[in-house]
Picture (cartoon, rainbow, N blue to C red):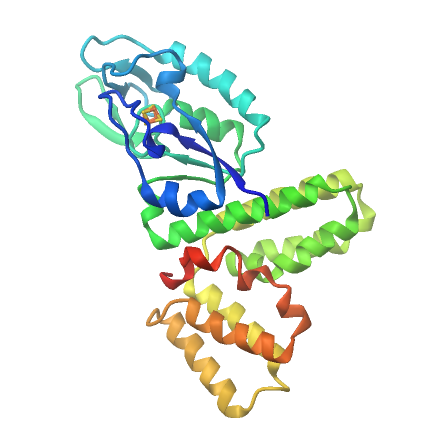
Amino acid sequence: MEKIKLGISTCLLGKNIRYDGGHKLDRFLTDTLGQYVEYVPVCPEVECGLPVPRESMHLEGDPESPRLVTSRTNQDMTGRMLRWAMKRVVELEKEELCGFIFKSDSPSSGMERIKVYNEKGMPVKKGVGMFARTFMEHFPLLPVEEDGRLHDPKLRDNFIERIFTLKRWREVLAKKESRENLVDFHTQHKLLILSHSPKHYQAMGKLVAKAKEISIKELYQQYQTILMESLQVKTTPKKNANVLQHMLGYFREQLSAAEKKELLEVIDHYRQEYIPLIVPITLIQHYVRKYDQPYLKQQIYLTPHPWELQLRNHV
Ligand code: SF4
C-alpha cells in the first residue's frame, strides 16, 4: 500500500511556528504513524500571513460563529483567516487526503472544545478552531482527530482504522468503476463494518444486493457515504464480541467442544474488558490459518491496520 495522505497541523511535526516560536512535536505521529503516512502540513496562522513569533489569539462572541482576535491588541483576524481557509480547503481537494490531525486547544486549528470568550471575558469550551471548522464543513465525511484525543487507545484505533479503510476504498476508486470491484471490497470489509454498526451493515448489504438496479455512479456514491458514516460509529467490546462469536460459527465443524469452550471464554473475557482485543483475534487468526477458512481469511477485520502499530493490544 502506498503511504496514506493525511493533513496535519504543522506544529505537531516539530516545526517552530507557534505564536511563541515553539512547536508541539508529537513523536507517535512522526515516528510511529509517520511510517505509514505522508503528511500534508497546514498552519493556518502562518499560511494566512502572520509572523513567528506573533501575538496569541483567541475566539470570542457566538460559539457557533465566533470572531478570531489577538489577545493583547484586540485586532480582529476573522476575515483574514476565513478568506484564507476557504481558499486552502479548495486547494486541499487535490491532495486526496484520507483524514486530518488537528492541534488541540488552538483557536485556529482545534477540532472541538475550544474556549470562546463572551462579552464579560468568561470562556466557554464550546468552540471550534476557525480553520478546523472550515475544513470539516468542506470535507464532512473525512476522518478527523486531534493530537490529544489520539492518546486515547480507543479513539486512536478508530481513527487509524478509518484512514486505512478510506485508503483501501480510494484504491478501488482509482480502478475502473465496476460492480465486481465494489462487491469485492464490500465482501472483505463486511465484518469490519458489522463491528461498528449493524444498522449500516444491513443498509450496505441491501445496497449491494440491488447493485445492478442503479447506475454505477450512484452505487459508488451511496456506498462511499454509508461506508464513511458506518465507521464514524465507534466499536464497543459488545459489538466486537458479537463479531467474534459470528466468526466462531465458521469453525463449527472443525473445532472440538473444548476448543470452542476455550474460544468462547476468551471472547467473554474480552467482552468484560479483562483482556485486550488482540487476544481473541490472535486465536481466531490461528484457526483461520490452520483450517484455511476462505471467507474469514479475506476479512479486513482481522488486520485492519499494521500489527506493528499494536493498536489492538490496548483496546
Ligand atoms: S496550532 Fe495551528 S495555527 Fe497554531 S502553530 Fe499549530 S498549526 Fe499553526
